Image 1 (cartoon, rainbow, N blue to C red):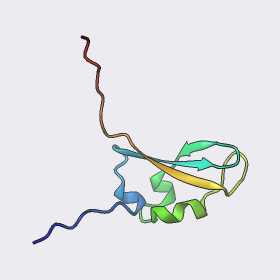
Image 2: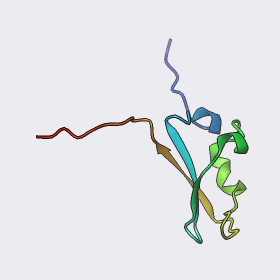
Image 3: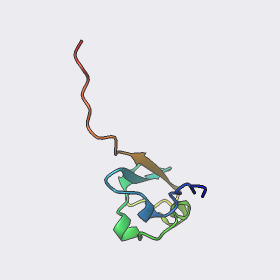
Image 4: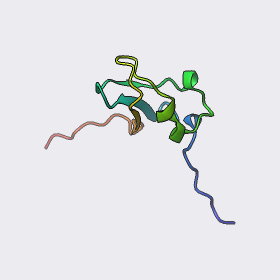
Amino acid sequence: MRHQPHTLSRIGDFDPAKFTIYASCGQCAHSAPLDGDRVGQDVEVHTLPDRLRCAECGSRDCSIRIVFTGAGEFEYEER
């Protein structure tokens, strides 16, 4: 049986312990993390920009950034 890759298309597909989804305004550069529970876990990620409005300036010129934060802590080794 062939393995099907897992796609990350819905908000709920992104583990909040490993990913942070940010909304960013193209007008005033305000940026804030999205609350997946408030937005809805079944919302398709590609539909988010059309649903957003900047909390600072009211612009609808918004985009999203998905940041992987699950690498954990690491320390540089002294040489």
